[in-house]
Structures are given as structure tokens and as C-alpha cells.
Amino acid sequence: MTFQELLKEHWGYDSFRGIQEDIITSIAQGKDTLGLMPTGGGKSICFQVPTLAMEGLNIVVTPLISLMKDQVSRLRMNGIKAEAVYSGMFADDISRAYDNCIYGHYKFLYISPERLCSEMFRQKLAHIPKICMITVDEAHCVSQWGYDFRPSYLKIVEVRHLIPYHVPVLALTATATPKVVDDIQDKLEFKERNVFSMSFERKNLAYIVRQTADKTAEMLTILQKMPHGSAIVYTRSRRMTSELAQYLIANGITADNYHAGLTDAEKDLRHVNWAKGRNRVMVATNAFGMGIDKADVRLVIHYNMPDSIESYFQEAGRAGRDGQKAYAVLLYNPLDKVQLHKRVGETYPNPDYIRQTYEDVCHFLQVGMGEARGRTFDFSMEKFCKYFHHFANTANNALRLLNNAGYIDYVEDNDFKSRLRFILRKDELYMLNSREELIDKVIQALLRNYTGLFADFEYIDEMYLSHLTGIDVELIYNVLKELNQRRIIDYIPRRKTPTVMFRIGRVDKEEIGLPPIVYDDRKADFARRIDEILHYASSDELCRSQQLLQYFGEEKVKECGQCDVCVRRKKQKGSAKATRTLTEEIRQVLSDGEWHTMKDLLAIQGNAEEIRALVQDMIAEEEVVVKGTKIKQK
Image (cartoon, rainbow, N blue to C red; front, side, top):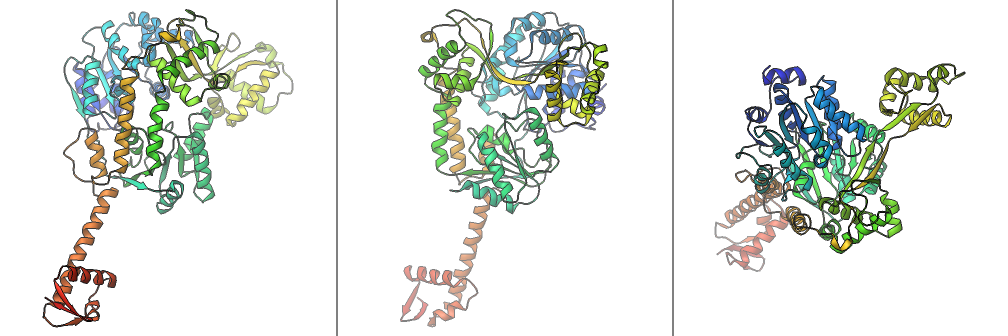
């Protein structure tokens, strides 16, 4: 089948968009390829279509677990075999996924970059019959100069060395400066430079910066002035998402909040309510990102300053996906500068603090010197901070740096799915008397849709059971807990918990080293990015769109004509023209050389105060002479 035929059959589209076909053709020719595509540009099509046209498996490296799950689910619904391997999965499930790729003619293996280092992956990789390509999503993560550098991405090139040399790499990203573009190709060992890029210009999107002492009131005013279409308000604090949503509701605007701490059921419900227009505004942290393709988002407001232009550009770009006029508004005041610079120290705490955090973690988990290599521990940040008097945010960043330095694998949000098995035998289950209708519906749904529940634990999905039975997901959860208490089932609910895995045995804290690529260089680069976004917010001399596009290397771009800078210039030009016209009219009245009163001049159509001011300027310039209350041209 041709690429177009595959696109039509599996995705229902008649033609490719933008640079999709160019990228697909390039990778199909075996060329290492880098695609720069703004958010919403259709990146997944660029690697899914050629994979179906080629023989073998595509290894897709991505750090976004939610994206993995979403794409694997969609591919499977489309009849395409796909697997995903990520942190938090049980060893048996990981092994089963790899075996499917070895023996089951699977087309896609989505894998988190951290798993590339594992011995199991390396062993299984050698037995995969044919690999047709490697896809690197969020490719800016491979570059030290990228805004979200992840050292685990450097392992991708090691994978290249373990497979045939001719297998091409497709790297995709939505945000990359020219320096990062070059670095991505170097780090992934491209055989030759090969970049396809779309312009990042969004002609329908007006970028606005509002300097205000009262961000909350300004946010409300903006939303009231734009009563139509959906909106997103981004803030950095989970607590603020709730407070601002309640404030909007109190002022007559339907709103909800969203952040990483919500349960999956809560996230799904809030996303659906917003997507269907039941709530106009979603107040969210940057956790509200993946999968937002709602067309009628007319407004994105950044209540708090993001810490890089890349982050701002991606989040602002969620407005106006339908091509209609939309606005991205950044609220700014001088306090933001102080808060952003403070963020540098929080994100990159003192090296001595990092070393002490490592030692405290070892004590907390009761790990002896030289012990625990390869062991994984559940890790309660709340208890850890309470026992050792740490601030959660700073400790979290210290653990990330220890992760990047290679001492631990720290996963903040492992997702352990619910598991269930029946304690009663099948015949005993059918002999239960006077089962309640609700309980009976749940049991029947389990029996009809899951196999092996009488032999061992199986994974279940409460949301899926809710769809099957029509029972609210919270009620499903309560029914399963009751069945567990009555010893009819063993039920282990879904849980999200951080984990710490020791890559090497515990070392003395004084031996902890933080190489420049992990600490000094990254800290300096983080500070530079903050200076860049602060400059963007405080500068009002250059068109906002030009500022953003020039940051990403697009030099020859026209003024957008719709940002706050362009609109202010238009008003100033209009005002200057009106002033020149009014001055000429005053001179016309005085051109007869006779004496005139101010009353004569005020007869000119125009603002009286402006006329008086212009006359005073003419007097100061000695263009006219004054005698008492009369005036004439000199």
C-alpha cells in the first residue's frame, strides 16, 4: 500500500499536512531524519505511517508515559499490534511485552528512555527479528542545551550500536533552537545532516503581555471581555488551580482545575467536562498538556511565568488549533523576576544539600554502605520530608539530579494498575444468596470481560468497568472494596507512588560527583532561559511573534500586527498622524497673518486640551507671537 492509502485506511485522512510526507519519504529511504513540528503538527503520523509500510518493529522512545498509553491504545483499537514498556511495570509484564515483540509480529514498541539501560532490554533486543527504525520523540531531551535535557536519552545512541547500521533514526520535537538542532543530530550520530522544519509562526494567534499588579482581577477581566470559546489558565501551584477555579465560579464563569495529584478518574472526568464545554475554563498546572486537541480554545492565560520560552510557546500554542483568531496572554509584574530567579536555586540546590539528601534517603530506606544495587523501593516523599526536615520541592529536585548523575533511578509518578482475583471458587460464587443488584452487575462484568481471575491476580480497570456497567467509577471502587472486605475477592487498588532504584550500591556522600553536564552547565543554561523569558515579558520594542520566532532561529519574519506591541504602535502612529493634522489646521487658521483669539482656534474640530497644548508648543518654538489674549503667526 502507498503512504496515502495507509493514511486513509488507518487514520481516515485524504492527504498529509505540512512536512509530514517529506519526513515519511526521507525515513522510508533509510535516511536519519530530524523533524521540527509545532505542537499539533501531527508528529505521530510521521513515524506510524512509514512503520506500517516497512517490515519490522519501530522502537519509539518517549518520556511521556501517558502519551505511550494513549497511542498504544489507539493503535490497538485500529488493529495494529503495539506494546509499551515503562517504569512502574512488573518484571513479568515487561518480559511479556518484549516477548510479544520477538515472537508476535508487533509493529511498535514504545519505551521510556530509562528502560534502554536495563539488562533485560539489551538481552531481548538481540532477539527481535527485524527493527525497521528508531523514533525519538521529544528529541530536544537528548541535547544538553535543550530545555528538558535527560541524560537517559544519551543511551539511544548505544542502542544504535547494537542494531544494524542502516536502521534509520527519526527524531521529532516541537521546540528546538538552532544550537539544539545541531546537537540532536550530533548526539544521535546522524549519518548526514537532514532536517525538515515547519515555521513556528501562528498567524491566527495574538501574543499579549499584560503588566499588572493584580493578576487575579486582570484574569477575570480578560475572560469577561472574551465570553466565547474555551480557555486554559496555567499556574504553577496545585493549590492555586483550585483557588482560581473557585474564584472564577464565584464570579459567574464555569471552571474546573487540573493537576498531577488528581486520580485518573478525576482527570478523565474534568477533561471530558471541559472538552464537551460543560466548563469553559480549565485552571491547570503544566500537567494539563498531552492530548489537548480541542479546536475552540480561544484563550490561554499564563497566570504565572513559565521558566522558559520553549515551555511558554508550547502551552500558548494550545489556543486556536482551529485556525480561528485566538489569544495567548502572559500576566507579568516585577515580582515575577524575583520569583523566577529564586527558582534557579530551588531547581539546582547546593551540591552539599544534594549529597546530604542522598545520605538521608539511604537512612530512610535503611540501605547500608555498598548495598541495594538494582533494588527498587517505594518512596514516600511526605514521610521523608517530615522525618528529615526537607522541603518537598527542593528534595524532589535533588533526587532528580541524583537520577541524572547516575546514582539512582527516581520515578515520581509510578502507576501501578489495580489487580484482582476471586477468593471463592466459581461454583461457590454462583451459590451466593441475595446478591445486591449493584454487586451482581460488577461481578458479572468481571466474569465476562476478564479471564484467569480464579487462578491468579489479573489487572483490571475501574474506568472500563464503569463504562461496561453504567455505574459511577467511584461506586465501582466502593463495591470492589466491599467485596474485598467480605473475602469474595482479593482487590489491590491502583496506586501512584514514587520509587527509588539504586543503580549502584550505596556510596559515601562525599563520593557523590555532579559532572558539569548534570549540574554546573545545566544550572547556567536554566538561568539563561529564565533571563530569556523575563526579557520577552519586559521588552515592548519588538513584535512578540518576531521575538518568539527569532528565538527559534526564524529571522525573516514580518510583524504580526496583532500582539500588544504591534497594536500599541498602530495607536501611536494613528495618534501622531492626528496630531500632525491638527497642527496643520491651527497653522491654516493663523496663515492670514491677522490676530486671532483662542476661541477662534478652539472652533477647529478637535480636543480642546490638545489644541491648547499644541499652541503652547508653537509659542515655545517662537512659531507664533502673543499679545495679551491674542495670537498670530510670526
